[in-house]
Structure formats: C-alpha cells, structure tokens
Image (cartoon, rainbow, N blue to C red; front, top):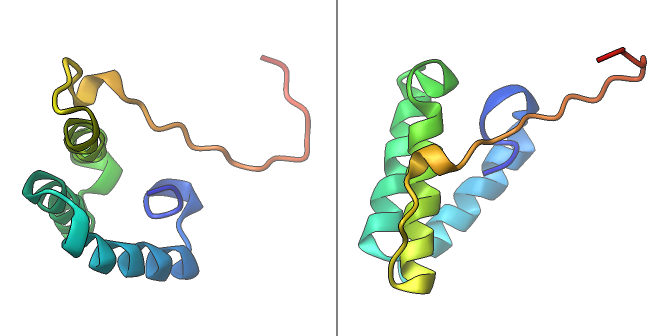
Length: 93
C-alpha cells in the first residue's frame, strides 16, 4: 500500500497496486478483499487520509493478520502509516 496513499503517490505505484489487487482476488479472504475495496472507494471519493484513511488501511492489516494468524487482538488503531518525504536540508528537531 506504500505509494498508493499520501505524499508518496505515483501513477506507476498505483498500477502495480492494482495488478496485485487483481491477483489477490484469487487467494485473499473475503474480509481482505472487502477491506481493500473500502480503501479504494475512500480514495476515489476523495476522502483518503483526510477522513478515515488510517482506519481503512488499518482494517486491511487487521484482515490480513486474521488470514495469516487466524485471529488478532489488534484493531486499526494499532497501526500508523508513516510518510517519509525526502528532504536534503537538515532540520533541527
């Protein structure tokens, strides 16, 4: 999902994402397919990171963990996506 949302978005990355999404229809659980569809709908509606982007991305991770582990005690709130923006000038923190 990196490069699909936020400041790191690119057309090439989106195309690669959709190629992987189409393949995933064959092997992902119903919950993962629905979670990915919800994220895409969120982006298309223009709500992305502004409204509930963290939730839709976190829901995908939770659904994937359930696929792999059979269960999880985590929720979308336990996952935070961090954007890295290349900046050549050093800044004090």
